Length: 366
Ligand code: GDP
Image (cartoon, rainbow, N blue to C red; front, side):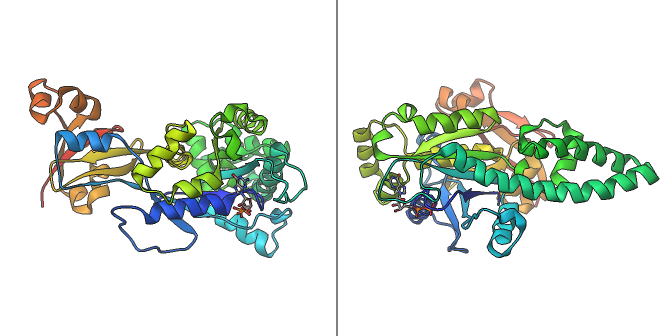
């Protein structure tokens, strides 16, 4: 499964946020697996559409789809120099598909900051610079090797890779992440094969104080983080980790009450889950009409047989067609019969690119 790794300087609130995640995960109604790894927290992806589908096509239970966060502890200045803990830290980041970068955005005299002052941009720079330096080292090594091959053999692949490396190198030398560059599809494939740390998508999470929860935009630290994120084409989100940890222990009704009292619509954790899911290019399709109304995760761009394979490999192997209705149509017509009468039930074949919100019944040979 795709996973987002949580990183940040010491004492910014990573463990607090990760605790909130594991507590919320432990509350899951249909927890499908035993906890595998203490550094992995699994949560349900909140999706209001499930309840509506279940209202129209009732089933015994509702099953949310899930998402995994990985806790990556231990950034230290000098990690890119590759000693001990630092090496492990970079290796752990290499394993994840997206980065959730937690930044301290609250004042609290009782909580020491590693550099003795709250300065979000400086903090972001400290971590990003380690990742940039690690990437620069791998790119430089590769550059020397590929340059030689491209020059002597003049083969298409080496030349293409050399061109990509030449595009990346100066950007890293300027201290900027690879994700700040744009690549076409062919280049993208080459970049992927380089396994660079700064090519992964990043979500910056401002850990704001309790007092700023009702109006995060009034928090100067959050504004700085947001502007920075925008400057590199990334996204930012404000949460109060300490509060999220408290919310995660409440049941649904209590949670609702708490959020209303705070004057917010959705918990920070729910926003974080949704944003991370999107960051990874994930989307949701549904199955209904059996014993459960269920949400499933697929990667945007996947075609119907591949998506069928998310449920079971037999569905993919014996795929015939996907009987599909969009959530919007089901919601609008209010019943499957209404959908059929309106001609909105589609019979999609093997080349159909599944869309977020599709409700599908797969037909397959066994
Ligand atoms: P980590 O080192 O990044 O994992 O940081 P921790 O999660 O251990 O948090 C460091 C300290 O900051 C702990 O004492 C937390 O209780 C505190 N802390 C975390 N989030 C918040 C917050 O939103 N507001 C305040 N005031 N303190 C927080």
